[in-house]
Amino acid sequence: MGACTTASPSLGTGPNPNLNGLLAYTNGLAVPGGPNGLPSVGNGLVNNHWANFGPRIGVAYDVTGTGKTIFRAGFGVMFERIQGNDMYQAQNNLFGGNANLGDVSLTNPHTGVDANNASISAATLPVVVSTQTSLDNTNYRNPASYQFSAGIQQQLGGSSVLSLAYVGTQNRYQSEITNVNATPYSTVTGSAATTATTANYLSLVQYLGYNQILQVANDATGHYNSFQADLHTHLKRGLQLQVAYTLSHSIDPTPNNGDGGDLDGVSNPYLGWKYDLGPSTLNRQQIGFANFVYDLPILRNTDNRPLKAIAGGWQLAGIVTMESGIPINLGISGNGIGNVVQGTTLRPNQNGPVSYVKTATTFASSGNQTMQWFDPSNFSANLVGGAGANSGLVTFGNSGFDSVNGPGRDQWQIAMYKVFAFTERAHLELRFESYNTFNHTQFNGVNATINGGADTGKVNSAFDPRVFQFGAKLAF
Image (cartoon, rainbow, N blue to C red; front, side, top):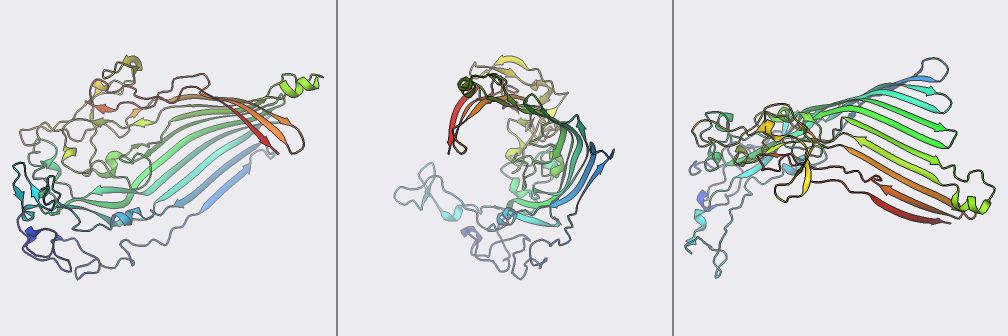
């Protein structure tokens, strides 16, 4: 935007000769400790919140008075403190950007050269803009989770217990990071998108002289609701069994890192974290599992003691897990606004319901066999219209975050083991274990890039096949 004409207070000389010795330009950003520095806010950058009252309450009631039907309920409030990374990211040098030379003279590597071997003067290097991180003092309460449950436990017979429960959470003041220095929304979408190109993007941002200004705030929300059923039983024939089932749904905005943790950057700086509100990264709507230990009756009553010691007394144990897939967040390929507006992630438009075709197919790139998990034809790129510089560029779509469900799992792990006792203290344990016992193909990743070629929507990886393992342990 031209040469700097006014010095900023309490700052050193700018990093580039183009500044002509003037103090570097901050464009309104205050520097702690300077004449125009930040005011004291609770002796820190954000206010302290001391009234974090986190009660816990639980209730258990014997419904029938016989100890066989118990009602249980509980409620608790938990708080978290963001552990340092938000403040560490805020410790950026306002003028830490560097202009790099791609080609230098071999006789003097401090001198740049262009394609015609002409020397490049350091005075012609640009004033490099930097990215800053700030904390939003108006939205920085401690993240809180309100957790609650209610359920019934019923004794069935003399050795079985059935539990049915509702378990949920409401999460408030969750952290997120938004770029507050994006260009006006009209420059990147719609027919008026005519100016926000890479060449002049930095002349259109709200705070000139900077690229991204990332603002960390604790203002996002999320929730989890579930129905949980559990059956424990111990049969007289030597079978211990637990069977459980959970039907649940977890919602939060954690788009970029994909780990469900804190300090996730929002993918659309214009609509904020609500644009990314959708199924959690770890959301599995249905989970069923069973585990068992069975004392095999083989040679249990034989009088042949040597044969019983060797071939009898074996136990069969297993863990069975059946669960629906984790969600898939669709991306979009092509030359897009995300290449201009830093820190954005683009999603496609959704033109119809998700169709899970699950048909056998091959990879166009390799010819290897795979499965077409979902039909990509119901999704398309959202293109900027008009005749401006951005016409035809991909921009933000209307498909929801994590809008496609991935493949589920059907995992069996079965083991046989026996303990050979030599003395009261010494014994040998033999174990024969199998993972994915029935060698069931369990798909994993799916190509989720719309307009990414003929392999879009196809499964591109799987979990391990069957594995056998043998082990022996001697204890004395």
